[in-house]
Image 1 (cartoon, rainbow, N blue to C red):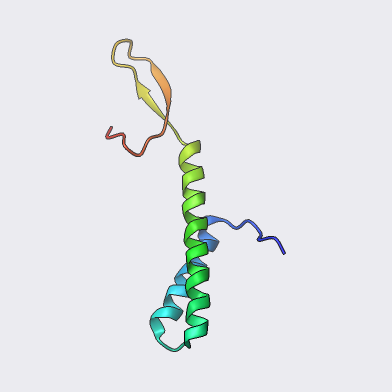
Image 2 (cartoon, rainbow, N blue to C red):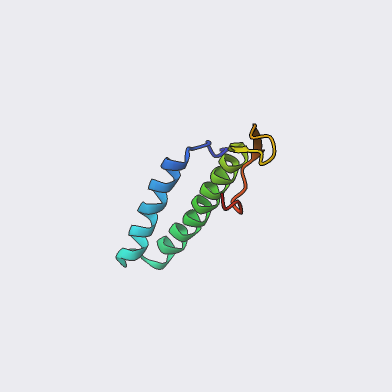
Length: 80
């Protein structure tokens, strides 16, 4: 059965639930390992969704010489 694509918020809520269950200490080792594995998958899904969103973002910046607005790809390293 192929995994259905979920949105970021759904993945994050499920991840929070996994963390809560793991922190409770009320689950056995087998369930803990299963929860941990699911948590890793959810983390990767969230990271992938965030990476895809970052690629879609563009930032409008003024060109220093002409004062015109130009589109540039978003970069997390930009400090402006």
